[in-house]
Amino acid sequence: MPVKKYNAVGIGNAIVDVLAKVEDDFLQEHNLRKGMMRLVDELEVKRLHTCINAVKEVSGGSAANTIAGLASLGNSAAFMGKVRDDPLGGSFEKGLKELGVNYCTKKASSGQPTACCVVLTTPDAQRTMSTCLGISGSMGPEDIDETIISQSKIIYLEGYLWDRDEAKKAFKKAVRIARGTDGRVALSLSDSFCVKRHRVEFLDLVKNHIDILFANEEEIKSLFKTSTLEAAISGCRETKNICALTRSEKGSIIIFKDKTHMISPERNINVVDTTGAGDLYASGFLHGLIKGLDLKSCGKIGSIIAAEVISHFGARPKVSLIELVSGRGF
Image (cartoon, rainbow, N blue to C red; front, side, top):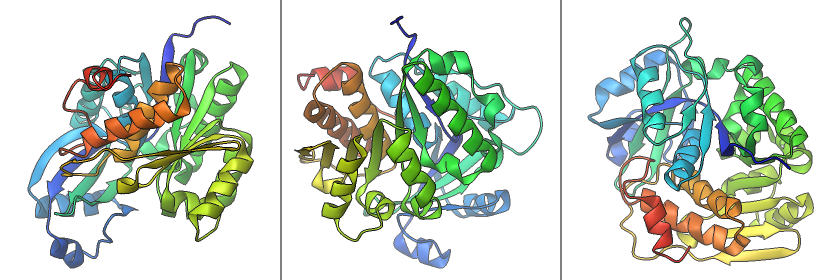
């Protein structure tokens, strides 16, 4: 089999994150449900932006965060996601290219603005997100580069893409190309409400079209329509996929066929902002898979990387992830 150019390619919403610290009463005042992501229009994002003192703006989006983490770990990586030729679009592209990621989607010269997400972090480190998808939601099959997909060992997709019909077509095209060129397909369920909106279609994807699944506890229970983690784990076993389930301070669980690995969380972490924790866990886990490590080691690397990102604001690493991981024996 020919050598592939990329270890991983991510496909997802190209979003610039606006990060801010707020108190709990701010969420109540603006009718925001703590810990959840909601879709809003451009006017609502602007209104929230005027009410906060932004800490910083960084290129973000779930799949983009994961790909950025993989690049920081020394992997060849690319990303597909739609932006406008506006300042935020330039900021998004710059943020990925500085990490060595090949951002390979041409900027649109017309249409809605680049997507923006206002990420509000409360003192308990929970993040509440208001996202205007802007032009990212208009990503379509024409934005999928067949050559790059076929040249990738793994494609990584975020469940949020399933919210728009054109993006869904792009999603399906990428999966079809990857599976036809010996690529592995990884999916993040993204959000429990996203799962509820598309549960039947997600189940079909998980059972028939992907190889690696990432989810948190609420997302996986929603997928299998159960109130217990044990029943959800049984559902994971039946899929025959590698399933990595994150559980915040409880660590993570890796399921593959009849094997279950319990991964302990990192200890003595000063939790500042949980934004991107699941995304960077996926970076570490996939990095381990790419290196050919056993699943328990993959989960451990995921925990190490996730612990780093929650120790500061923003979903991008602040230290050399290669040195961090090698320093822990991986």
